[in-house]
Image (cartoon, rainbow, N blue to C red; front, side, top):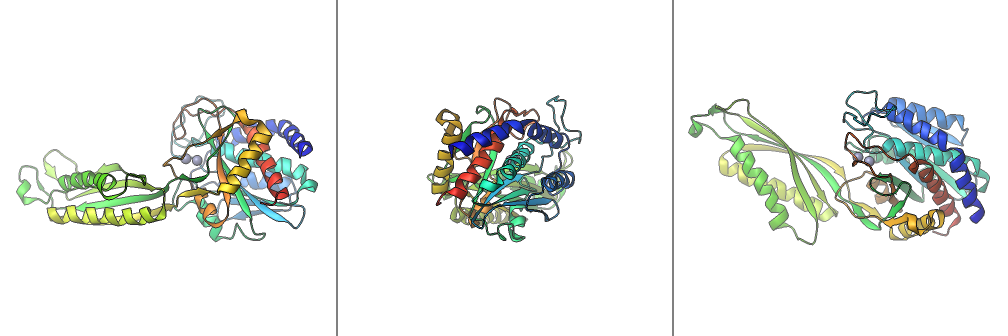
Length: 392
Ligand SMILES: [Zn+2]
Ligand SMILES: [Zn+2]
């Protein structure tokens, strides 16, 4: 394995310019979730040129490749390709040319690192003890999540994927350092859409109204008591109302108010229970006010549960590849990630890769350190080779 490790490191070095160039190209032309037409075309063409065993388009904007040597296990490696509705302000020479759209979550880096892993694995194909499925998925940032769609379209079959790995950049960690966390690492996520219907009136005649603004205010406050009074303090939950819209003037009580929010939990039981509690609360408050309501849930992602054995396996591979000082324990967060869908079907782990000191993901000024990229490509390739040679 020492031999293959140095071979992979040399190849990561050899391809680093190509990997960085691809990242810059994708960064310059970011596309929103489910609209990754140019990005997926680019990935498809680049993979096709490598003459790997199979390259397929999946769904509208997904691409899946296969590198196969022997009839052994199959390991899945995944990258997401979508950008966010944010206006870039990095001032980089390869900054977004699409107004209001930006790769602010590092998915440009994920895509180029997986492509880099494909370059490396294709070159050492004769030494692969099985096959590697390269999953370039759309729409991590938007419900129902590209992962759930690709799974329905059979991405984990033919050949059957035995284990799956994915990585996500993490700011403020040294470039190329690798972080692992076993068990539940990311939260479940569902979107809430609430409309409160009242009765419109003159602002000076509130007795003639059913005031949806006062009712909506009551709903917002009461929803916070679900966290503090209806669920266990040992079982984390977040309920955030992120938008409230209603009314047009100082002296008109409007007929309706719309609320939007998100709910995060770390297990399916609390997820189901809290959605019921939310509806009960809305119903109670609106009934008391004589108002009516509509409550809609856009189902998001389940909690992300990293397999403990494979997380430990990947952590050891990282120590082996990069040295223990470049490996850290990553923390559980209440953010969500659609890689969770793969982990509901197959064991694996979703790990973090340090992207250097920069502003946070989902901000206009994030600028990842490109030294991250060859390391991320090399480690993904090494992890795949190690897994195929293991008895995991
Ligand atoms: Zn994101
Ligand atoms: Zn992301």
